[in-house]
Image (cartoon, rainbow over all chains, first blue to last red; front, top):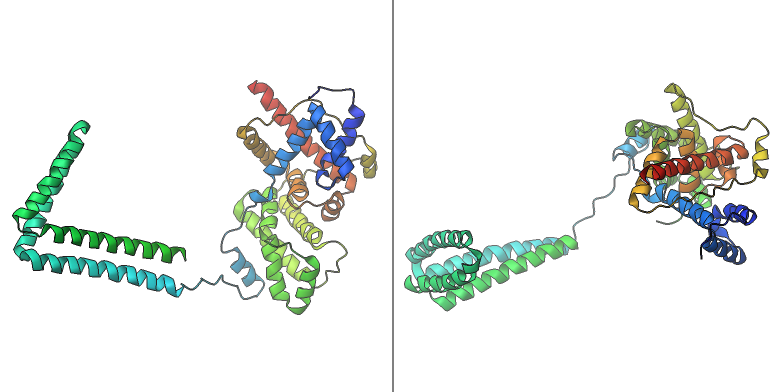
Length: 198
Length: 190
């Protein structure tokens, strides 16, 4: 229990002289210190103030001079500046990025080539034009009331499949291509992320 | 970050002065810059002072005999450089000096404050930070040596050339003025 004691000022003097060297107290001193701090509000406040002041002037608050400081000082002293070596990129990072890019490009070409093979250039153009229509439809869905959005999206998926069937796109092939493209994109993203971390 | 070993540094200095000096600069650069920043709050000026401290350190290392610790010696240089800069700026380094024998301060009983200071929240700490910036430069510099570098009264006395009693009195006065300002602020808020 904390008291508002003023009758133990003798103890307070001893205890407060301990505050500044509280890190180096012996076991018995520490015991007496803790006991007193737990029962004397004034000394507890003193400890709190001391701790807060330490936090304010803590090493974490160190400021650093500007980046050019060291080079400028070294030049002044006629010494060669030491530049922080830029860490060399690890081989994995380079290969990871290259693999990601190659995989992405290959996927796009494959999709293009396969789509042209299955539906011809004319069919592809129709699907692409259909895509513009898709964007407009999404716009209209999003501008509509939120209650009907899911129903409209459901209906839209069926419309898309119907549209693909109408222009002669092999639906399973289209879905496979999309999956392949997604996987390629995902591999690319993973490769770039991993290479950035390594 | 490993602990800086002064003995090891002096050995390294004998075998490869430049490499050892770089090591010393890495250890003290931010501390000395912060110290200078507390004497002269403008960053560019503080940087110039820090540079001056290291130039003097480099020039003096050859004659460093290890009578005091390396830290105390570097801070003595820093103190002199900053005091001189403050003088040049037309201000004076406000000191708390005792007119009587300074060592009498050792026997002076510690004054008991019975008032409470409660740091209830972050704002109080931030307020203390603001107050800290406003106290006289000499107080800030001594508090920095004491709390940041954890130098003893004796070491601060050597670094500043002040008698130990004055160091204690300055620390006491600086803390008391900060404490009173916090109390005053808290009483206006309540």
